[in-house]
Length: 74
Image (cartoon, rainbow, N blue to C red; front, top):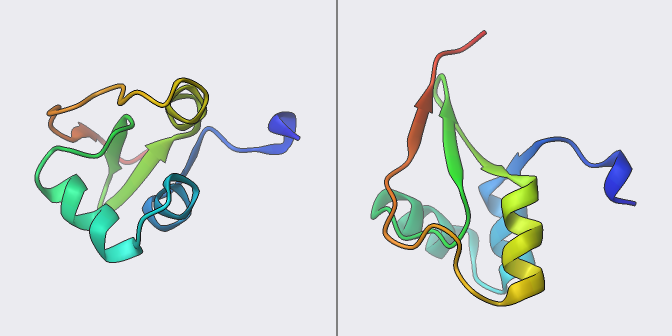
């Protein structure tokens, strides 16, 4: 199943997988406290799938307190 997942996913889907609401997920992103690696691509905020899988597997935040990374749109 993992082979069919893209490199990034939505904050909404990642929040659901982690057990909290979409609103809470975006609040955590705004405060740099989302437990997975989060990137900005243009105006979109995306969660790195590999990071989400590691957090789900370990139960430990991967980038606690990290600020959102910014990527230029391609």
